[in-house]
Structure formats: C-alpha cells, structure tokens
Amino acid sequence: MAQTQSIGNGWGGLFRKWLERRIPPARAVRLNRRNVFIFPTREGFAFGLLLSLLLLGAVNYQNSLVFAFAFLLSSLFVVGILHTYRNLAGITIELVGTRGAFAGEDAEFHVSIAKADVRAHEGLSFGWPGAIAQTIDLLGDAKVEIKLFVPAHRRGWLLPGRLLVESRFPLGLLRAWSWIDLDARAIVYPCPITFGHVPMATGTRESGTALARDGSDDFVGMREYVPGDSLRRINWKSWARGAGLQVKEFGGFADRRVWLDWDSLPGLDTETRLSRLCGWGIQAARERDDYGLRIPGTTIEPNQGEAHRDAVLKALAVFQLGADRGG
Image (cartoon, rainbow, N blue to C red):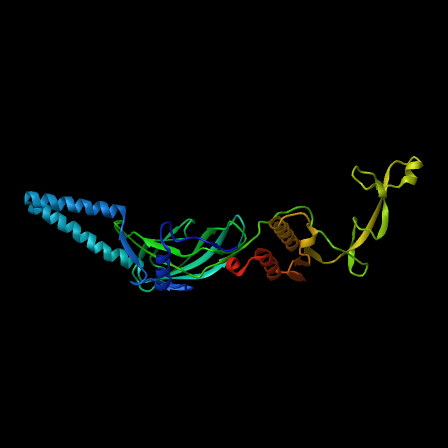
C-alpha cells in the first residue's frame, strides 16, 4: 500500500513528466543551474511595484534623485537574484538511510547536505510535502546530516515523493528552490495491538516443557467452578457428595517455540489480524522467545534477534500488497 505525496496542488502531469526528465531520481543530487529555479516572492512583487511607482514619479516630475534611488533599488534586486541562486547552488543532498515506523507514527529519513567550497550557505529549508520542514545553515562544517520525518498513515511502503529544497536568503525578495527525487522509501509496519499473552501452540512431551492449562491431553487437577466453565468438565460426583461444584482441569505440553499464527485469530478482519500479530511479535521479541510467523503465503521459521524481528514485521507490512502498492 504505497503512500506517495503529490508535488503540489494544481501542478499538472505534464510538469511532473518534465521534472522527471530534468531531475531524475538519484540517491545523491548536486544543485546547479539545471535543477534550481528562482522566482520573486510576494515581497519581491511588492518591491517591484514600489520600483514602478518610483520610476513613474521620477518620469512625471523629472526628479534626478528619485531616478537614482529607483536605479539603486533595481540594482539591488538584480544582484539579489545572483546571491539567492548561489546560496542554493553547489550543495549536494544525499539520502543516507531510512528508519521504518509503525502506522500512525512518523517515518525517519536521514539526509546528508554537503557543500563543495568554503562559502557559507544560509537559510536552507528541506522538507517533503505534508511534513514539517527543517532549516539549517552550512557555515563552517562541510557536511551536515539531518533527520526528516514524514507521517506514515498506513502499512506498506511509504514513498514521500520529491524533496523540496528552498532558500530566500539574503533579501527575502526571491525564492530559489528545487524538487529533487532521492528515490526514498521507508517500510511502515502495522499498528501493533497488544492483547493478552502470546499464544503457545500445544505439542508433545518431547517437543515442549511448559504445561498449558487449556490443553486436553492429561488430567491436571481440580479447581472451583467459575461461571462460564464448560458443564462437561464439572465433577458431578464430588458435587453429589456435597463437596461443591468443582471443575476438572486438563493440560498439554506447549511447544518451546512461539508461532504467530494467522489462523489463531478467526473472525477478525485483515488489518486487525495483522495488528494483533504485530503486537505479539514485538512482545515475543522483548521476552526473547523463539518465535515464527505463519500467514497465508508466508512462513518464517522460529528464531530470535533483530534481523529476525525485522523480517517478521516486514512480512506483516507487505502482506497482500501488489507490486503497484507495495513498492
């Protein structure tokens, strides 16, 4: 269930295709004149309107001082175009790594920003659409690594789309920006639901050591009747002798291994089952049990460790997702 953020509202498919040709996906992108765009901001348009009024007044009143002031401001605007572009050009943005998340959390993307020369780059903003942008300055350090977060709403592969890099330094009259595709994606696991203990599969005396009270192999003992107990397990003979209602308990040997089994959660919809299995998997990993996964089409043998946990969670995340939705 791939999640892709759009580049922007109102930007047509033709522009996106042109952008894909001009700035193709890459793990590292260096900004230059081919992929940096520049345009006046609202303050820049207001500044241009002020210049027009000054020139109109200078022409009307033939005032040399107003002419000089208008030309000075115009020169400042033109020089600002160069400095705004140079503040963004020359830096290299590289995707260093990603960190998966559970549905409802934020996926984490590690991005490295490096400069090619000694000049400073100030007021650089980085962010994906729909996420909080981060602003940094590249001053003395040649490279800075930042963490960018994108909301993960549902399980599957999160494709954040193109990263917006922009700057309005130094005057704020112009905005230089670029839409770069770092070919980024992050895995989003189902939202874990913890419900009771992890069920242990019943086994034989040779395959298990722990006694499961809800088994049916061996007689364990008697206990007091609790409302809801099966009437077939009531010891009617002891009740006839006046000993009160007692229930027979039977047990079986539980397998040493824990199985996260799809069939152990009947009657639930797909997403709820995956969330339950995800919660049990996290609990089993925390308790350092040998646990495996059985879901339709996938079986992972019991094991331990971080790599095994990630494999189990990934199998749950991409369950029944096609290539177009699962990345």
